[in-house]
Image (cartoon, rainbow, N blue to C red; front, side):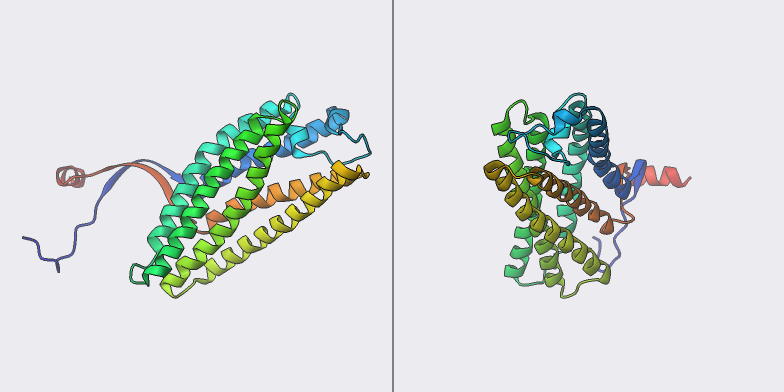
Length: 268
């Protein structure tokens, strides 16, 4: 019988493939980022009249994201980028939640632990909803079905803001269970908070300019709406990229757990 005081033998693995978690995050967010830039530039140069067409028919400069990703061939570029983006994003979100759940101090008060778990779970599921809404907005364009597209856009905006808030609250709650917060974590939280504030402020502006455009048809109102939309999109991408600050050296791995015989054979 093995004594509890004896050191446990470390588990060993044979690694078949290893991929940097940081690189996966950067590549994942680069798909929509680059696609958005390509769609904007190409549509602005070659399809200027199409992307500026609105029900008010007033002068505007900045087209909306829906406008530049709803025309052909830009819609295909955008849809392909989102197809490559969605899968890794869900995996990253699941890893992020699992990582922070393991950081919760089991010796902390039960109420404090439950609070941290609640916010982390909320952050995960709102991210799932946000990702689903992103797919809806992408694959049902405003030209094909405006009513459905608009509803998916609203769901995306709300779930995105709730996810940001829940993520910040969750990390802070985990820190409370451990009675300490690292300097690097504080910097990451400050960056997340700033990006959330920007998104919240731009959302207020987006709603205001949209109502001004739809109800009053003022010149440039739709351009201001679109500008707010772009800032929100890039702030959202930046918020998701901040995950690399929590995983600077981690990797995704495909590995086989070695048993005693395999370890002995490998040592020979």
